Image (cartoon, rainbow, N blue to C red; front, side, top):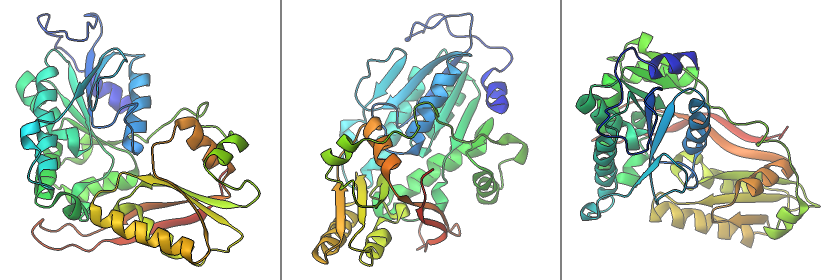
Length: 343
């Protein structure tokens, strides 16, 4: 946190008195946090990270959150929708729409002392804010685009744009925050132009008072989970890097006395959705106990499902060799967590 505080409180500079959309005070530094995910629209780890980061930063400085999605009721949160004129052609338009939000976010950061962006979806917005308003840009790296070649399936030619957004922003950022030592190593290997002294490690954090063990038989019953049987639990998006097809293939060997509970939605592409649906149907057809939750679930329900699980299943990390976006790349799992006890 010390590195973030040092970056977030640069010497000199003050908010523009002519532009103060959030009604922030003038006696504290003003930080603009740019992100795709922010409650209640959170679908991955980055959104959870940003939620608690903003909560803690607001104890030190004024913070305005610039996030994708519908308007929020929370004060000092600006929400953005992509330009409708960029809705086609698919799938490439998704990257163009992300860049349209970057432009809108950058315009609204005028008056801030620092821009702090998360993921490639918002990194270019932070870079634009740095250029336009002459403020520092800090970016947090949760994963690296060149190490995620399956994004070609999701974005088509737009993958080249996501690579551009991340590279442009990270090579010019005043500070880079990696969420682990491994990610820091990846940053320095993938982007040799980034100076090592600009890359700091600050691990993701959550509130342990909220994320504590809380079992609920009512929650299990509501989702169709048999409380008398052990179960493994998976929670994540339907995307290549999560390894859900591999988990479902392994579920065909599951002891019929046990259960697999999967909370998964938001498939990256129609193709992976069809693949996963076919595997799920096969698991059920062969007599295995599969409980599928294909919609958003509340935080309380998620905690209860984790708490009662015998084990959880997740893909930890993928390692690939960076290549040109015009070439085919093959990903291979460097480290997998299969079924592990929940403490």
